[in-house]
Length: 326
Image (cartoon, rainbow, N blue to C red; front, side, top):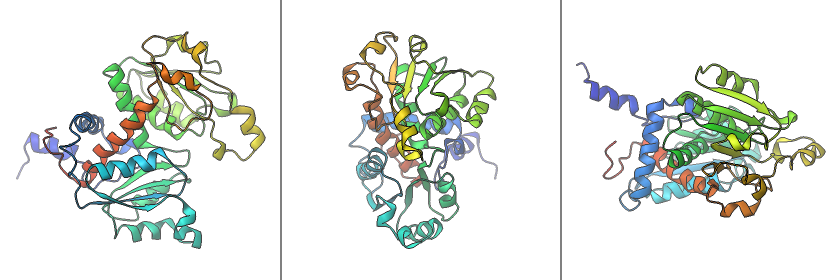
């Protein structure tokens, strides 16, 4: 029997049972649907509180995390589900030598979905291929961080209404910053974005990310080492920390960590509508006095991260949000 167009559209949007390793796994309509669900969840907290009753999420975090782990766990709890897992490789059988494959296979018999944070690039793909339940990449090395990107997109969309025509500055560690790589690659798919890539020469954007921008005819980029020469042109400034855990040489880290510090003086040069984002944690790259500026959006990102993880979990588990008609 031939499916109708509406049935095809519904199937095409479905994420039920899907693993999310990068946002490349999703179409733009699917990403937009998650953003729509996020807005609904944010304004209908009570209605969605039992969406995932009886479900279990396993949070397997081989690296330290505060926001990502707790927001995944809070997301499932706010949907009515339960959470199991660990917050460090030392507290798992990995310390005994168990492979990631075997851990994932084991946990897949306990849980309905897995959120995985791992220091090695590609670990999320290995995990997704190791079981038949959804695996959500919560960050794999310096590679990708798709759920942080969903939080970033939700924050930018809330501030500007769309992504069209924005000038987006990304500042700091652009070499190892998986949040930066994920955001650039996804914004390229929406198109019509100008990127300003601000970093020391030791931490410039990887070539594969630059290639992604070049491959999108409506996107462009410039590279600079000077934040002040660019800040007045930016609609979004995405600050990142220099990540000590990615460095083998501590002296090199100490030399680079304070390259960029966003303070009140620099903010005076920026547009009154500019939004400042940061995936957190910060060290000292944003002065705490900037927190009181209405352009500071990084704590909005924190809440949006939880909301978008609620939208994603309910989608991959196939649990309908009460009252939502997408």
